[in-house]
Image 1 (tube, one colour):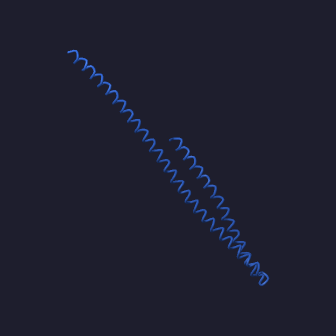
Image 2: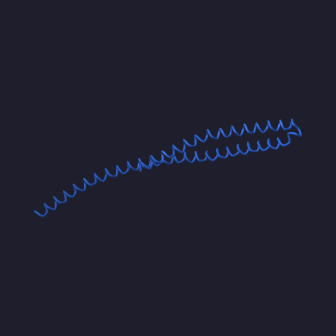
Image 3: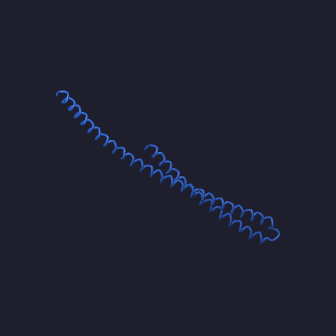
Length: 141
């Protein structure tokens, strides 16, 4: 049972480590989205300055901004999902710790019951010997 606890605890720690690593990746993606959005805004400004000649460039600028928005939205959604995974992992860790405490208390209870059984066995042995002694004495009378 202890091995199962240790395995689950190790898996939980690994999961938490992976979640922390994804946080840094999400920051990179979010920065990419912000930079792409700025490029889109700047491209829109330049397209407006160019007038009719920049009309095609304006479409590209708009698509660039959409890409930035979609990337940012996706990063936020991924962040929410990993937040839920982290919460579930934390709950799992708490449950594992609770199981460990239950196992320890059960081990102590079993130990206490075993001690009581040993005492009871000693008393039964004394009673058996006393009964045998009484039987022997009664048969001698």
